[in-house]
Length: 579
Picture: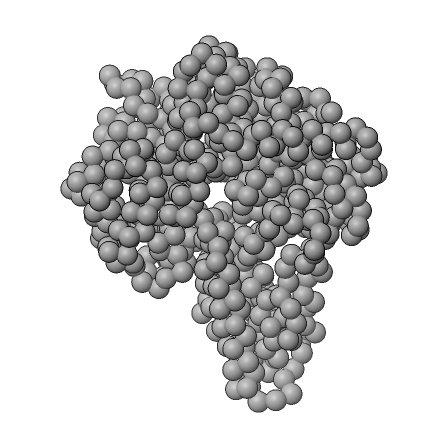
């Protein structure tokens, strides 16, 4: 079994193959798996440069429109059958298939340059993707969506199957350079045993959905794309290592994991430390179906309800009645328990045609989240009204928080909007470093804060969370990020108040980091429901005093690698459980 330092090193940075027999990358989801690999199929081949029409331009334009509508419809149908994060990803990709900028660009090349529809959409897609890439931040992520949609339209025009996950009657480990969001959203855990990619980052769509599925996964493992179909490998998702031709040691570890994972699949419904100190473990959900499953998994409430599920895939704002119905389904799943509703987090990677401006030069730093109320007043007010109406008909304890709050004035204004709507427990997300620094002042106006560690890390480190080469920077183990979390927790204990501080970012699902967060002063943790049992088991192995000592080890470390190594060395239960 790898040592603590080896585990940490492999999961903190993108790295080259370590030997002819092994590779290492960034561990996303724990799990020890032995299986044969199947590779993502070769991408759709590029149409010949300058490929000219042999028929009428109007026929080519019609063919392109028909193909784009077919791809949009196919992705939308898949979205309708998906749920949670997968549904949101598929809906966003479906919108891209009908994007006017992309389709009009292709039509222009057909009419002005006489290109075939295949070549025209290929070049139009390249232009749009380059534009998005140059914008950086979240918009750079959308470039991958454009290229995926482009390939699907070309395949449709050629009468070929769309690119995607290989079909198989037997389980396999999926290996590739990366997965398109639409592919990742349809992974079947009963067939795909584990996921390994050579690119991507720890907070990419691939990583987030792998966590939601509980699928052992490693990203940024350089060189794995050269492996051949049928090769047997051993994947250690916690250590971030891939071993070819596994031997007795690896097979024994995989067998032990099968037993351990069964034990870790059950959460008893009470998050607590060894000394009885309570740490409620909540679930992140994207709609009523997610909430029902989270309740069945014994989540102690909802720490993050992503309300985007009501808005994505629409050209117009949903009515108040439509929103009430959607929210009430979540509230009904948790009678008598806390449900934290995040107001619409539109913008950046979640553009909405009726609310956001896709032409912003830097959308990640632009009008998103709470800031949309600056440019489109009324949408947030109506959403708060819908949340209040939905809460009236249920027994859930409804809390409401705004994303992308940067100043005390913004927090005060949002609290006032909540009061006007009849919502009595307002809070804010801490995703912007300024909010962490000013948490004491912000908490004089709101009743709680919740740390969105994905964005907080991205903004603190100025590192796009989707990029594999920046994986080493983009980890919440970074000392600077831990200090911002510490400042936030300290702010909750000043000015004469003692208000809740939660974490609803991916950091809460890391059992080792969960101990650190509790030791720093975080009072609740919210995560994908599949992570509840593992986090609960590790928290139950330490007292509050021990958690504080372990947090101090991380806070005083000079690097993310050292912080993680120190904490793992202090928590032998992680190795015992394969986490």
